Image (cartoon, rainbow, N blue to C red; front, side, top):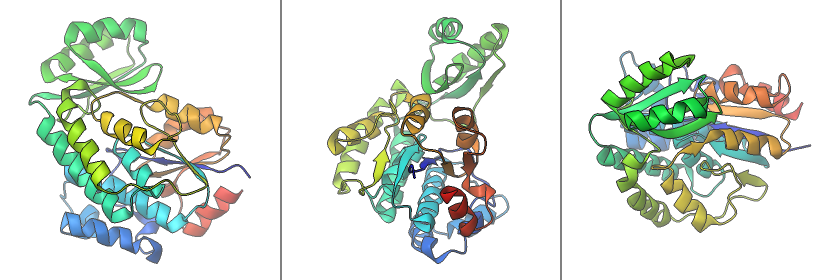
Length: 303
């Protein structure tokens, strides 16, 4: 049987019930305990607490990694392809066994701090859908914005100064974009504006004692969707993606090229599953949070 592909999500999909069926599983307990030591509170109670801020940089990045690592610990797949979106790429490295769960979560906290410190004030991100690059690129130049993430040929995330992004969204809609909206983040991730975070994060990754991925697992790099064969080069790329655009479309192509017949988004959320669905047969892509039990997930993966 062809190994499945597993997708680790970035920020944005956190919600009060995000841990779902994982919350009571003993296999995931060490991950929750490691996250609690960083958050000062059990992540399961944190997400359920009314009014809790689940989207600030440090908390969000820790929660996203917690979700993926808890799901992976519960499933314990022996084979598979791993790809991660933004902070999800670090989670994918943890799932691959390059870092253990506590180390991965500490690195997520470090990553968030470095990004926040490097981010220039008054900058952020916007999403633009339904506009091809021939029409979009001149608008980016005119408004001082740059590509941050390529989700598909006509679906990108861009970064820049707040005023420029507001004008860019208006111009994109005037050019025929189906949607152009500011995203609720104050850090222009995956753009040159975060260059100062790259070297210290690379140093933190190396200091954390990375190990080769577990046998049977293929890890895809977020910058180009290619398998990570050289650990040292992979660390450079994982750090560089803080200030360079992610090609998520290439990551999904890499999952498809691997021959995977099942694709499971570990979460949080279902956004990655939604983006992957057009590349695979009907019913071949699911999100972990759609299932009520571990047995149901394993039965579907084996189907």
